[in-house]
Figure (cartoon, rainbow, N blue to C red):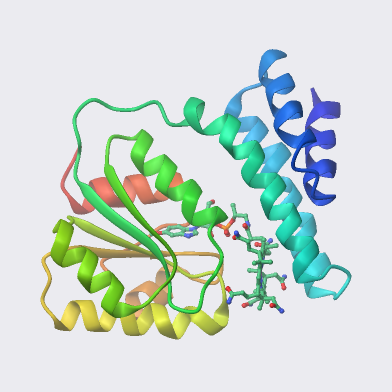
Length: 211
Ligand code: B1M
C-alpha cells in the first residue's frame, strides 16, 4: 500500500497529470481508502513542493504542473469523497479572497461541505469584495467561507470580513487557509475558523445550530 501512495506523491511532484489519475484509480482498485489516497498520496506531495518552492528549488510553472497533476487525481476521488446528501443543510458561498490564486485547499473544503449536505456555491479564486457582495445578494447564503493561502492576502481576508459585517448581511462568515488561525479569525471579527474541510463542516453546523 505504501509503495503506490509514494508513487502518487512522486508523480504529483513531477507534475505528471496523466499518470496520477491512473495511479489513483489503481490504488482505489487495490482497496485503499479514498481519504488515505487523498492525504498520504496527493496532499503529501504539496508538503514536499511547498518547502522546495520556498527554498527557490521549484518555480511557479513547475508548481502549477504539480497542481494540475493533483487536480487530475482529485477528479477521480471527488465522486467517492462527495457522496451527496439528499436535503440541503444550508447554503454556503466559498471563494479565495482578492489577490489569492490558490484553490486546491478551497476546493477540498467545498467538496467536504457539499458531501456533508450543504449547498455550495464556489465563486473561485481572486474574488473581490464587490464579487462576494453580488453573490450574497443573488444567493442569500447562510454562510460565506473565505480562503486565504498567503500572508499577503490576509489583509484582504480582514477587509472582506469587515465590509461584509458592516453591510449587515445575515450570512455568518467563516475563514481558513494555511496562514490563518483561530486567533486571527477572532481578531478580524469572523464568526468562525476552520483548519480544514472537516473543521469547516463542524464549524458550519455549529453556527447553524445543526446537531
Ligand atoms: Co503558492 N504559496 N504561491 N502557489 N503555494 C504557498 C501557499 C507557500 C506557503 C509556498 C512556500 O513558499 N512555502 C507560499 C506562501 C508564503 C506565505 O505567504 N507565507 C506561496 C507563495 C509565496 C506563492 C507565490 C507568491 C509564489 C510566486 O509567485 N513567487 C504565488 C502567489 C499567487 C497568488 O495567489 N497571488 C503562488 C502561486 C502558486 C501556484 C499558482 C503556483 C500554486 C497554486 C495552484 C492552485 O491552487 N491551483 C501554488 C501552490 C500549489 C502552493 C503550495 C505548494 C501548495 C498549496 C496547496 O494546494 N496545498 C503552498 C505550500 C503548501 O501549502 N505546502 C504554496 C494543499 C492544500 C490541500 O492545502 O491549500 O493549505 P491548503 O488548504 C487546506 C487548509 O489551508 C484549509 O483546508 C484545506 C484542506 O485541508 N483551508 C480552508 C483552505 N481554505 C480554507 C477555507 C476555509 C476553511 C479552511 O473556509 C472556512
